[in-house]
Each structure stands twice: as structure tokens, then as C-alpha cells.
Amino acid sequence: MKIDLHTHILPRNWPDLDQKYGYPGFVRLEHSDPCSARMMIGDRVFREINDNVWNAERRIEEMDSTGVSVQVLSTVPVMFSYWAKPRDALDLCRLLNDHIAEIVRRYPSRFVGLGTIPLQDVDLAAQELMRCLRELQLCGVEIGTHVDANDHCHGPDCRNLDHPALDVVWKTAEDLSAAIFVHPWDMMGKERMPKYWLPWLVGMPAETSLAICSMIFGGVFDRFSKLRVAFAHGGGAFPFTVGRIEHAFHVRPDLVATDNGKNPREYLARHDDNGGSIPARFYVDSLVHDADALKMLLKLFGAQRVAFGSDYPFPLGETKPGHLIESMKLSAKEKAQLLSGTAREFLSLN
Image 1 (cartoon, rainbow, N blue to C red):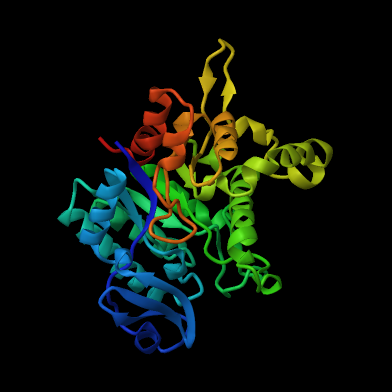
Image 2: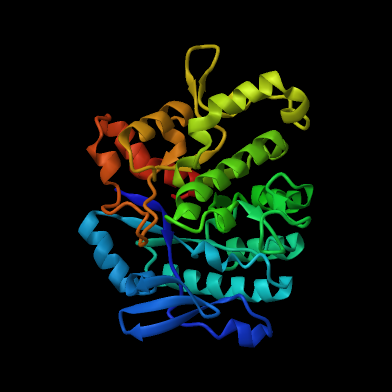
């Protein structure tokens, strides 16, 4: 069995949000033919997409061709719209969440869903999180690596995931046993990286490392001990710079350990006093495109915290979902854990 934790979906159509809300910046779809469309922001093409982004039957055909049993559906991160007016963002979240819930209801054996919430207003976000779990029967929500009401990463209103205001959301998620999947959405330094697709190649991994470090050093995992959080793209740059991060914790605690005196290694996989293994405090997906990188994830997090994720149906995703795990010299038990067991635990699936 293969459960793909990391896939994205959109409705086939939605209103012109710039017109509906009265100001620009929202994504709209322009369909060029029945099987393709452009995601537009103003006059700029954000991304060209095919019908497997919105067509559930097409998705199932492609899932069957690659042996994927279940996809976990979440929106495309550009739709988060944290810069929008809170009530408008809530309205958009409800549109997206209702669509995902409808797909899950139509094909309950093939899809499970994660919603999205308007994090620029934590009370509205908590309200929509409750609706996602209680009314729509989703497993949790997908959120961004930071919340910035000004649509850039350096403004005074930018909140990283350690911001005290977000405790309302973490507490709600913990109480509801909701899974939180963290995905980059607006990349730091993008104005310096206009060429070579560098925001996606450099900025995205850095964003995810920033989110992980913020939650560790901000003590979020300690204040909310039952909170379940997974990070996209194998945790971004964090696994490969954790040595530097730990070293900084030791040599400059006056800068690094101001809010949390625990070594960041304590949040990774380790051995207990009896020689048993304790998995990491948080989860990552397997989308690293490299066998040695995946081996490092298994060492740092333990198989119980690494879940198969493909980023279907986008180009930076795994071309044949699950192939990297299946191609590696791992025991049948480890492969089963990576391909489905970890996702089951993270999402609290029966």
C-alpha cells in the first residue's frame, strides 16, 4: 500500500477573486482547452497546469498506473493568501476546503484531505480548523512556513511559526488531534533570485529550515507535546545543516537558546536508556530525489517519522511516486512503514 502525503489539488473553476474582493493579487484560472489551464496573478503566468490538478478521475488513473493507493489532498500553497483581508481569506479557505471535502466524500477509499486556514487571523484560523475536522471530516490542515500580511518576508507583520499569537492555532490542533502539514509558499530572498528557478531550488529549502528552527527554538513542540507536524520536501535544508545548527546552540546560546535551552538534537531520533530507539518529535516527507539524502532522513528522524510524499502533479515532484523508496535496499518492514505506516500514524487513519 502507498499513501502519498504530499499532493496538491484545485477546483476546476472559482470566481474572479480580484473582482469579488475588490483588490488584486489573487490567483485565477484561465482554461486554454479542456485539459490545461494557466494559473494567473494579474497579467503574470504563475504556473501552467494540466487537468490532473482538478480532475479526480484523471488522478485516480495516474495513481493506479504508479501503484498509489491513497492521495492526501491539499491546496496549492500560492492559494494561502495570507496577505489578504482576513474575512476574504476565510471565504477563500472555505471554498477550497469544501472542494477537497467533496472529492474525499466522492472517493473515500482513494483520497483523504487537508484543509487550509487564514493564519493572518488566528481566531478565524482556529474556527476554520474546527470546521475542517468536525464538519468536513478532514484529517488536518496544510499551512505555510511563515505568515506575512504584507506579502514579503521582511515586514514588521511577518510571523514565523514560533510567534506567540499562533499558540491559539497549535492548541486547537492539539485538542482536535489535527495533523499539520507545513509547506513553503513565499520564498525569502526571491528578489535576489530571479533566474534559474532559484526561489524554488534555494528559497524553498531555506524556508522549511526556518520553520523547523522557529518551532524548535521557540519551544512550540514543548508547549504542545501532542501536536503532530510534518514538513514538506524532507524538511528542506534542515537535515543537512543540523550540525551547524547544533554547533551554534553550543557556542552562542545567548543568541540561539534565548527561548529554549534544549539541544535541537533532542528533537531528532535517538536511543533511550535501554538501547531502544525514539523517533523524532516531528515528521518529514520523503521528497528528496536522492537515495543518500533519504538515508540521512532515516538516520535523523527514524522510519516512523518519514512519510512517502511525491508533490504530485508538479514538475519538482517525484516522476514515479514512491520509486525512490522502492528502489532502496531497505527491509520490507521499513518500506511498508515509509510507504504507508508513517502517514497512517500522522493522519490518525484507521
